[in-house]
Amino acid sequence: MDDQSLSTYQRALESLWRKFTNEETWLAFGEGAIKIILTILVAWFIVKVGKIAIRNFFALRSKAPLTFSERRENTLLKLIENVLAYVVYFIALVNILGVLTFDVKGLIAGAGVLGLAIGFGAQSLVKDVITGFFIIFEDQFSVGDFVRIGQFEGTVEEIGLRTTKLKVWTGEIHILPNGSIIEVTNFSLHNSVAVVDISIAYEENVEKAEKVINELLETLKDKYPEIVDTPKLLGIQMLGPSDVTLRITAETTPMNHWYVARMMRKDIKECLDANGIEIPYPRMVMYSRTEQEAQAGSKQAKSGGTA
Image (cartoon, rainbow, N blue to C red; front, side, top):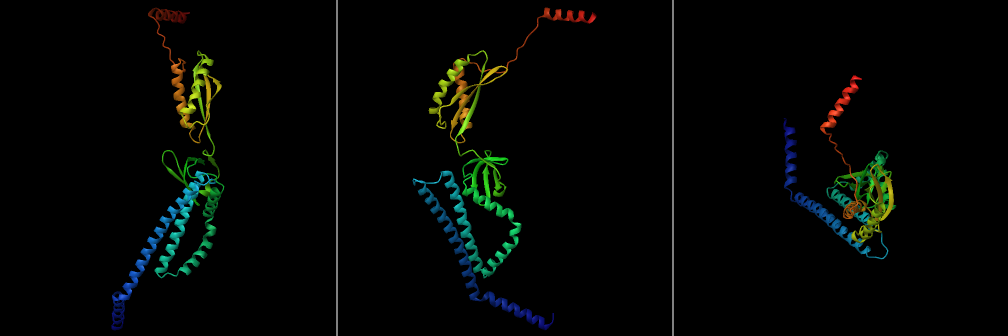
């Protein structure tokens, strides 16, 4: 290394040393770090307080005479909370970049140009957002509803502008892009119907069985609050090979028809047993031949073979 290069290297080291030992440099660094920390804390505080205020607002609205349905209010609540968090944290990020001496205006302008450039490749994202908006606006389904979307069936956990979260009864969470939602079956909008088929033996008196069941059905509405109206015995549904099938229907609150059907089967079974009405079940008849019958059968077989 020649003298000129060595001198340049020494001057660079001296300049770097003066910069790091300069009091103003450390004051500027500390001031910037404090600003960044304060920005993050203020953003977190605003989001926290904002969510509490939003929840209190919806709690007050629920007491008003004219309100949205509970399911729609839950959906709007989560959506507004997410929008608040996105906006506040985006503003905080812009402020932090400004503290770090980035050209924020240039970044925003560049982001606009870049967004326009990749917009043609982000059609699915735009489709998800537009579809999510119309799902919420048209109230197709809301948080807490039990729905079937394509091959998935479960409870809606969250609806966003881009995705919908669906929780199945076994605990899994399915995250579905809103743009892929074409057909939705909502089971939570109206009352459900529990359908119960009861079989009795052909030897039993059908009229007696119907009378006993009708007397039981009169008591079920008071026993189970999920039943909206007194269950009805429709009559004979089918004549099977060894049984007569009676059909019973009961209107229930949304999504409680499975529970009500299970309880009705149990109560009807106990009621029929108590009244001596037989419910048919498969039977096997065993026939044992005596020794004389076996010998007679053997002789008959031999005579037939020699004929």
